[in-house]
Picture 1 (spheres, rainbow, N blue to C red):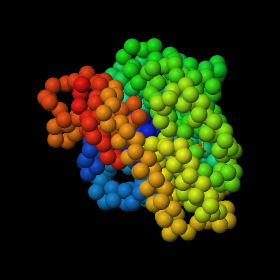
Picture 2: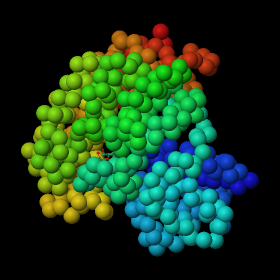
Picture 3: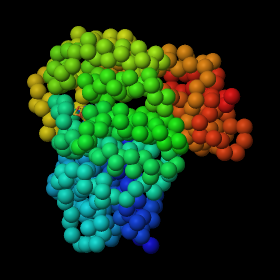
Picture 4: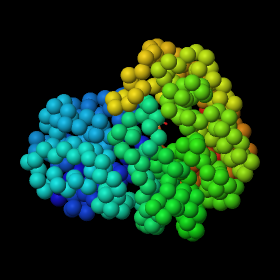
Length: 427
Ligand code: SAH
Ligand code: F3S
């Protein structure tokens, strides 16, 4: 039996794509392997959002080409494949295939015709979702993409180029995927602009959440990433009405400076952004918000950066992500004037990270003494501890009393906390 090795970089969307591809390859009679030196088919499933991620893929390809079996089929798929296109073959001549994020289902062609060089970086829309089989493994948390691409065109972002215009999957297809994830206790809907989801019949994300909440076996629902101005009143209200919808929302602000937001082509005001959070807190007083931040966007002044720090403190975000601005090909910001030197980006990132870490520590410590329903995700390597997630996605470490299986949702009393995680016990 032939074997395949797949390594996934980047976002949850890629993780999902990787699972579906594995399902397809198993359906073709292949088996997965972790050993790149014996694999018959080697796939790197890639991310192009920042330059570092992109470079990582090529250094990994360089390492693999010297270790793989000479006749192994070897290629890249995903956003770096789309970013680099035919140039990938020039950089790594041993590559057999280069497939963009909407062409994964073409992998079968290279298996049938291994002597060809296969390049397909077309944006063929939602075809892949129909062509790939449902997931084969049965995770407790199922990540389900509900759209491809993005129409927002933030000036720093390569995603609209790599994944194309925004397309929402049909409501029925998504719900079929939810039903197919039979072991899932938590469903996480994925999209670049997930709260802008609208299918051809006008069904929206709130409709998807309500339909999913009716499924008895599903206990928790969340979604990521939200665009601020797409938070409809109906969706906001749902946080107060639907107990299965977790009180945690990732809604990236990116910057606290109105000037920088304008240059990023994120045309919302801070007043509007804060107003959305206030509305959310009115209907769901215990909700927590997470954000993504970009530091050192072209032309970012000290005063702009200060505004970002202010908003980070003011909102009290938890579990947030901060990135140094990385110029990407095919984006408007890459050619803007006043690119910020690396040392300044580094200094600013450290200052913001300290604020975000402090926010996390404050929130984690405020949880001590409280009991929360947590999702048991597994055991640590030694088997001595259970690992769980709170409704706010904090990790909780629980001393396991026995090796016996426990129900997936447990009430956990938090006994201690630090900036990264919590400790607790089952009550
Ligand atoms: N809406 C998307 C965002 C995609 S990229 C989602 O669902 O995840 C994820 C994050 O990467 C963005 O929110 C942004 O903070 C960051 N990012 C995107 N392009 C970037 C760039 N050129 N440099 C640095 N960070 C970037
Ligand atoms: Fe990228 Fe902005 Fe869309 S960050 S994915 S263009 S909302």
